[in-house]
Length: 337
Image (cartoon, rainbow, N blue to C red; front, top):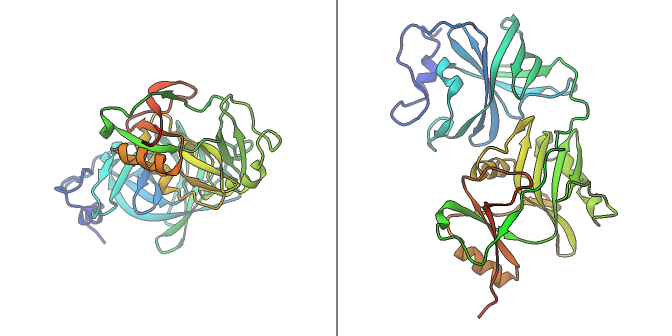
C-alpha cells in the first residue's frame, strides 16, 4: 500500500512538462471533505472527470458520458488515481505525449454532502451551478465502477433553448487582415437551424426562434436520428440544413450546450474542439470542416467548388445568441478571373 496517497499521481507526471499541480511529498492539507469538481477532459477521447474531496485528496473517476441525468441509465465511471486538492481549480492544456495529454476545462464546481462512503458504495449529493442531485458510485470490475442518479430526471430530457437564437455574421467584402486570429469555414447555404437534442429526441428552431417542421423544411424528418447522436447526451447544436446531392444534410458548425452545461462563454476554438471530439458524423449530419489561421486557400477552394461565401470566425469569440458582431464575418466568394 502506498505510503502517500499522491505517489501514483506523481509517478505519472513530470512537473517540468505539465502545467498540472504536482505537490512535493509531505503532509496532506486538511479540508472539510465537501468540495467537488467536474472537469471536461479532451484527451484521446472526450470524457468528464468527477473529483470528490476526501481525506486531503480528490478521489477521482473518469466518466466517458458524464453524469447520468435520469434513473434509467447508469454510466461507466473508471476509478483513477487520487489527485491533489489543488486540482479542483486547474484548467489548462496538458502537452500531447504526456499522461492525459489534451485540454482540461472546469465543467462545474461546488460542494457536496457524503451520505455513505465505503469500498462498495459512495453515495453523495452534489450542489453545483450546472449539476445538482443525489448520486451513488459502486464498483463492478476492478477499476470499473458505475454511477447512478437517484433523483428524478429533468422533465423532458431536452436542454433549455428558449433564450437561444442563431448568431449571425457581418457581411464583409474581403478577408480580415489578421487571419491568424480566425478560423474559416465554407458557407454552404441552406436553412439555418439550432438542433436541440435530448432523451433520444431532436427538435429544430430557425433563425427567428420559431420551430421548424417537416412542412416548413422539407426533409426534416430524415434528421430524426440526430437525437441519439452526441453519445445520447443532451446538447444544443448550430448548423445549416443544406441540400447536398439532392439529400438534406445537417452541417454542424457550433455547439452551445452539452450535458447540462452552457458553452456560450467559451471561445469558438474550444467549442469547435468539443464538437469535433463528439464525432457527429452520419450520412445525414456531419460537422463542417474548419481551418484556423489562413483564409486564402479556403476562399480559393470555395471559388473552385462554386461555394457562395466563406465565414471567418475569431478563435477567441464567444457565442452571442442573435447578435451580429465583428466576431463572425461572411465574405462572398469573388468570381474567377
